[in-house]
Length: 280
Length: 243
Image (tube, rainbow over all chains, first blue to last red; front, side, top):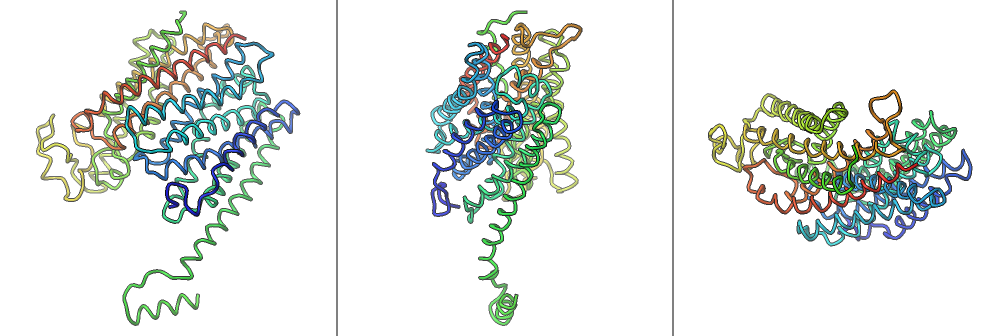
């Protein structure tokens, strides 16, 4: 494992952060520009958020939380989902001319709750994870962007009444709860270990994000005219990223192939195995 | 029924404490229990919260139009039943699949049946399976957390349907939007408090006889603060119904 997520195999943590915040919010805010392109951009914004969240969870879970990787993902999605919808609700309360404030307020509210929960973990529960605060806040923001992005992609708007009609009432909101948690926590949960390479983990994060996007496209069928665009772009993105992830896994597995497995016994068997590996 | 915002925050905070406290009763074994080297169900709190919480909320939501006590009882019964089934089927696997005797390494005698435990604990493990005391403790935990989730669901649902955006449509018994939103909110409350409790107990606990159970007050404090904040977000959600 890259020690504390900061070893030679980690990526610069500012890159996923910038991708998530800038890409995610731009995607969500461009939703109303066009009934086809807008929802596609919102779904791509959610993909950016998921990749950011996967990087944040990889950094914090490198410490060993004692509860496994998924639990912090579920917790973050839980308060981020409530925070994001609260932000949209406040925008409704302020009036129609303030609809634009909803998504950014939702992300900020989610991050505030994240900060409070992480603060409780550090002070009341006396957890000894120095980056818990920063990573929980990042994870909350990423989770909120992913939920808002997919919701806006289905509703074709980031206004609460539209999202209520096409995301909450059909129950898709509960699906996003689990779907986005899986997309965010799976990459590190699958790749953790002594040889974890963050670039490879993030390739898997792109593939889980794109397959979530493809599913979002399919379930958007009754509500959005852009459903097939979202589904097809998601499927293409998934194919490209999973191919790249499998290739990266093979490249790194080459290290094992070249040096060989450990010998069973010294002597003849060992020489025989070395010979076999060289031939292979 | 008009729900005061402060009552909503209070109900969510109490619900959160019940959930967080309830998790301390549930025999969470985590990865060691999955390979039968520790007592408890072989998964983490997040999964148990998902199973127990969702079932409890489905039963609570089925009783939506009933009085408060019935909704709360329905939620508790659903969660306790789900956890009971999980523990029972887990025990079948441990007893007939793995072939070990349910036993706890934390106590020498089961506090309920008085059966001796230490003889049956495989050396090098921390017990295995779900002995009687853990099962009873788990049922209590399921009841408590189900009560908590149903409490939060009930008050948020009634707050929401008082607004024009979530009002019950004419000719219908329930408001689908309010029920879904309140259910998702209560499920979120389940996850937040169960993970906070899980951080407190360090991943695994056997039940009320476990020495780690003494850490409960610390978790209750953390859960009440975190749930009050989530409850405040619930008040903001209710404001969103004014369209």
